[in-house]
Amino acid sequence: MLLQKKLLATAQNQIETQKANIASRLAEMGTPLEDQLTPEERYQLSHLNPEISKLKQERVDCVAKRMEVS
Image (cartoon, rainbow, N blue to C red):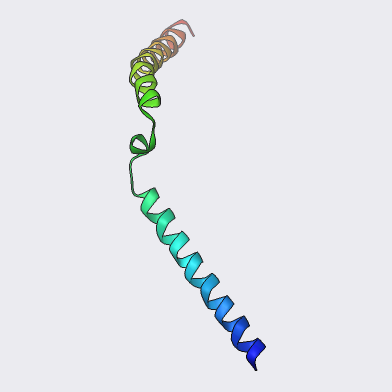
């Protein structure tokens, strides 16, 4: 009987730990990704975003030109 009580207590503790982990993950998912970046990563992102936008526009232009040629 004592062993069963210990096993039950252990199982209950594991369940509570998993509930806390789930709550933590759900809270993390609700925050914007940028909030999780280091200052250096934010700096890099601020410099990469304009380049990404430029490349996306170049891609759109290339697709449009290819459509004209075809």
